[in-house]
Length: 213
Image 1 (cartoon, rainbow, N blue to C red):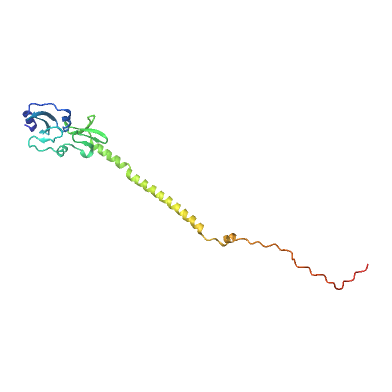
Image 2 (tube, one colour):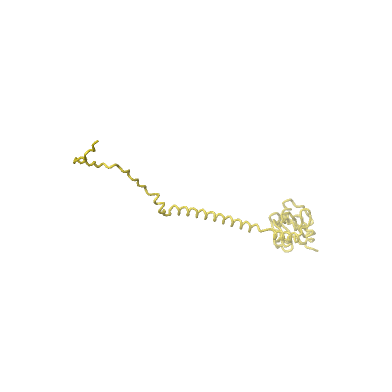
């Protein structure tokens, strides 16, 4: 006789669980009931044919055989393919796989979609792996684009600085002789003036004789 069957026979008075008490159960518990003992309400449940009990919501679960606490590591060992799923809820036995909701089925010890179709982790994981290998890595592409953008910015800044330096150098360069000649003030020659010296007097000496008619 299993430990659970002896527990059922030991407590003949059984009561249904309240909603809060049902939320206190783990998905892996296949059978359960509430009863009263020593004036207190207690919950019993069946886990792998072993009887476990709890004094109510917020209290831990313990084995009826030795009063050892049932820890979550023991419960988690009953689930399979935990490495492939996300958003795992140990108490409710729910999770997501490739963004689809799945639930644990105690009768078949397997994960199923909400339409009761069994989840095939092996084939789906291979397909996902193949798709990931065939598509480019988004992170590397983003890094390359970022590097190119920074390079273009650096080159443009450098060119602008070189243009500024070239412009400043041209403005500071010495002028050529031709340029200097063009910049010198031009001298204008004063116009020649008529001589103001006095005309020497005509000599009063002997005048030449006039030619007779």
